[in-house]
Length: 319
Image 1 (cartoon, one colour):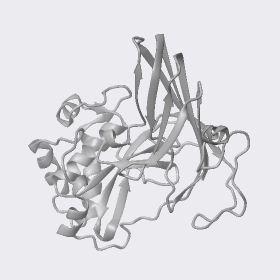
Image 2 (cartoon, one colour):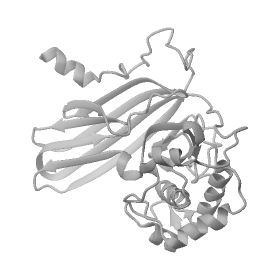
Image 3 (tube, one colour):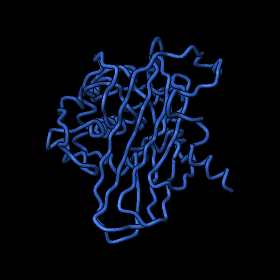
Image 4 (cartoon, helix red, strand yellow):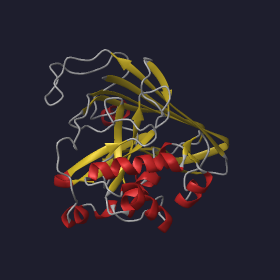
């Protein structure tokens, strides 16, 4: 599936501010089943762009603006080609995870800022997985337990809600489903990581729509460790297979490691923020997902090379 993605964030202030710095984690990853064809990041006013990979391998685009301003808009555009992901648990004797797997993925075993599980949640996970022999079966059992503990309701929670309060409230959104599912998995010794990305769907609780253009927000799902260095992706929000409609941005312990935007500014002005994501399904490009394109990919109208933003190129020409 060929998808064009436009992420827009606009900051407005009620008094002049200066020295704004923002870190964005919105650029799709380049993976065996997901190829980043092109990417461009721009801002108005024009800021200086620097890009690097963080500890988890996620691309971070830093946009800095020193000039005084009343508004600041950042737009990240990408073209991605995805294909159905193979089932890593298919025909696999995943009867147990040995100590080496848990050691290798120790950071995805421990508690983290948004994944502090209680003894009650450990009991829920143990009861849900009792009698399941394989890791894949236990993972799926925790998905069903997650969906029994909370129901989906937009704007029902906030970033930073504890798992205990989440369960007490009984409602959540995609990052809550991911955090709760991760907590259940880690509590019974299965390493699990948070995945940030985009989901091409009119409604993130279901992925069977036929629209060609959708307005979304960033989405979150989970990957659980399997033996032999494999990961099993699951989407507890909609209980659907993670496939070509899912576009990966990055991985981490929880939301804090892959928050789409973090920023600071200097000045007394109070800020308001408006963010939106548009995804558009395009005609596929003749291309091997494991090889190089037969021609240079430059989607018509607005996208540049995945290695260099337009603003970076302008800055280099001026130097």
